[in-house]
Length: 82
Ligand SMILES: [Zn+2]
Image 1 (cartoon, protein in one colour):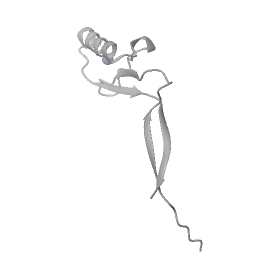
Image 2 (cartoon, helix red, strand yellow):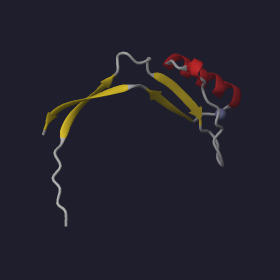
Image 3 (cartoon, rainbow, N blue to C red):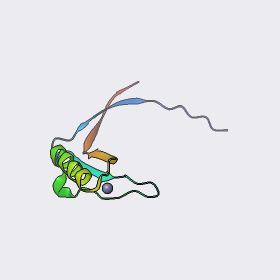
Image 4 (spheres, rainbow, N blue to C red):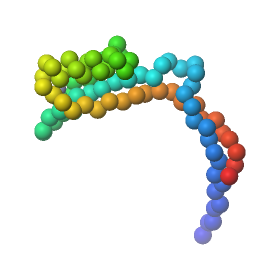
């Protein structure tokens, strides 16, 4: 039997300053048997543009359930051992 001891290390995780701004997106998941599936495109990558797209899609379809996401690049910097 092999016995292993693991050491743990703290990592600081923060937004990478050289990467593009966080990208916002949303997809309509309204539907009983299957989701509607309508989704924002890359031109709607800001929070305001996503909110506007959702409002317009709701107005046009009556759909009311969405999955929103924010995608960003982060850096993991190793810190002290514990
Ligand atoms: Zn929809």
